[in-house]
Length: 509
Image (cartoon, rainbow, N blue to C red; front, side):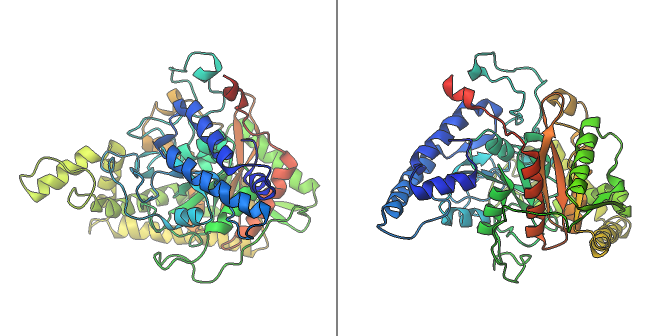
């Protein structure tokens, strides 16, 4: 049952061969069995099961013909990254400063999911305030990758070493929720690759839509000009279903596109003969593992054999993108984090000698070193004497990076094909040998230029490495060509027939 895709589950719910209540119960049971992966920080199991029972009654009435209305995701479990506001459900951003924060409202994309009948089984673990690329910097501890993991439930000892693999970040908990079968989809956030990176490491689909297609209302901001709600799914079809359900203009988010978006269904019979696939030469980056390079090469050959035109292209300002991203990220972080002062909500320090000392003590206690470091760097970049040399210059470089993409797509290229990560998922012991900033720069090298340009991109599992870990490849398209990106990704998915992680043995233990 948990091996079903979202599309297949909906089909079985509609014909009455599957119960929403039983489906939710199975997901909750699986979530409990794999809880040592540390992917859920706030459980919502009881509430989700009650809602699923109600949905099961509605589905029964629909199947029996007593009414002809149905909600697309009625009773189906989903997981939500812990930086999306959820009314009456704790939302922490994996931080001390928001550890007991319960929002009075729900983020728009989450509300749309619930309006379509989806139930939330829990809030997922992440890097604190989404600042990281490993899901290792959380007050709740790191998230563990289920691939090659030695589960205690399967008869062995719980893996207490540091040689298990990371999930990637910052949305690692949401990726694990989908990879393990604990949910049929999940939301993450994507500022510089925080959805696509963990999707690649955990063997699931990760979709970042065109900036402005999905509302950011209720997504606690990291970098307003880069943040996009991300979608995790078992298949490209599932990602498309979720995207169509939650996309559209939102009056509470002025950055959403006002033009209406027609919903779409991806075709099953897809041809790529008319396509021009671009291979950016700048993405042959130092440190790329042979297995990733080979997967990239095989994918390009696959398109060529199917009749697509495949050619090398250039995105010349890619080499400056990580520096540009770092400056803009820190500058906006400094602005966004200023709201956490211990006055209106969140943690409040006991030092009340003065307002300034209260602010300082609250932020010192509430933020980890990574967050404090970015705040300090951002304020440095925004100083009057540095503003033009750092922030303004970074904005100019960002425009050049976006122009690179426009020129390539304007020159006849339909889709860009790149790796998502330099390597397969590294071990926790290796990843934590150096600081967060260094690892983030390494992990985001192929993903953050897409956020700077605002274009859509999707990561799809391509193959397994020799050590049995997933390798994901990334498809990038022009602005507002989300359907085309999803369609090409679905074709690739059909050809590779990637075998998803099977944890059914845990249900027997």
